[in-house]
Length: 346
Image (cartoon, rainbow, N blue to C red; front, side, top):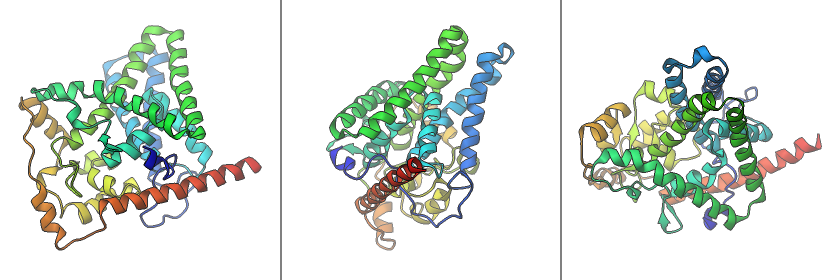
């Protein structure tokens, strides 16, 4: 954790792709998809909260699905801030935190630093798939958030105490106050509707995003350069998921904007990974792996594909790419501080 903090942990990894013409308010035109996802999700929560006729499974189920996508937006936003304005990005973290009922900034140490390195200075990733070991694989999927969640927030606390980043601490506490303050106010206003139609979707999305760590990395080789992650490459799925199905390239080039991941996956990842790690459908994978199969699938030897590709398609090592991403993050943090100073001076 100490090593990662020195790289400027507060900021997301930044631009690796081609420059995009400046757009109004947001850094990339595709970001309006993410803003829309969150807007519709929060709208459904408020609709169920204040309009009794809307308290129906046909509204609750989409709200739960959008809660998961809200957590996906947290992931993307904490890598690449959506807005030009640093202040607006910080406010948006608070909005997302309410939708997930946890501080969005927790993703900085837990995901950007620890998970992307598959370890915590020699200790396992807080969301390592090996934290669950049931013989019946469905139980691993069900129970995983009960292990990964406490591990994550304990780890965030250790990281904050170790690095003593005052700006992170203030932002984290502000997001905590927004998430639990607004939710608590709704519970006080009308307890049962708030519990069933606000808190329940919030919890569903938060627990599902933790399960993604298991789904994407279980039985992959996290020590390898390219075969450390499972990808879900369906086109419609990735439109909805803002390309979060392309996980290998995201790990290896964390600074790429999510809109660029599909092409980068086809160019860099597909020739280098074992075909079993490119899944056409997440739903099909879940049914096959956790529904139809009782036991945990055996680990595959995926080294052959990587070795074969390495002879003809060499790239800088994953360690080198990580170092470049961390340097870019440190640069963006310095830029963000200067932007805040200029905004305050106006």
